[in-house]
Image (cartoon, rainbow, N blue to C red; front, top):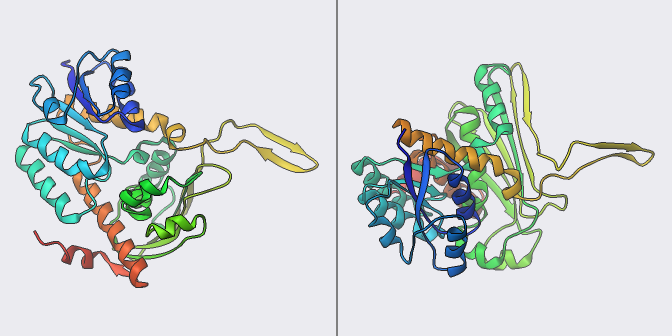
Length: 340
């Protein structure tokens, strides 16, 4: 089977993860990388990547490149994806594609016109715990889903400098949960009602964001989901999903450092959750990029496409509008703001 030749743009934390995973896959070959930081380029050379280039445009000009992995800052994603599509390169792009709905739709039009594949990095879909929950729901073992509960709490807030350019909690953090809410029960969201507060760090509020939130989603069939978020959980990275249905319930719980339990006169004690997303979703990142490679080698649809990213962005924008206006917001209101 022919190897897919990849180029990686951006070698921060996520870029290095994708690079390392691709280098272990028999049907993938990383032929080039780009990053503005020399130490990052040297990291790639140390891993055996012989070609490092100064710019993204140079990367796309390489005729041997079949696909690009975009792990650069969020504000470059749309332009880089569009340029890759026009160059005939398949695209894996970290979420979000952009923070502007019109811009995303423009890029998706280019992708469709150029007939390349675009996959977005919603890595939680590939977590074994959450995939098991989805499979149980899909098999009908809990009957018809009525309620979805998603908990997503980080172990610590990111720097305020990051928050200022991230799009805020709903478009940076909760967007993963919005995607999970659609994925886990295969239903579309009709209405969003969000409440939020600054309870952890006043600097986050001064930057125009919140650090704690509850979001209620109503699906088109009237069933509901509740998402709770916090930028800081004292006990670690808290990632849980629950689906309650007409015949039962299924839960996906945290991955722990180990499964020991200490029972003594003071109570029952166990290990904390894995520290953060790099540890919690290490295997999910491998599965995610392997599925992208498989889609390219078999010429099949990617498991998370541009439409998935578009729907999650719509929910996120509705959540922001709901928070600002203190009312439920229909997804149709967000659709009506699109100008293309």
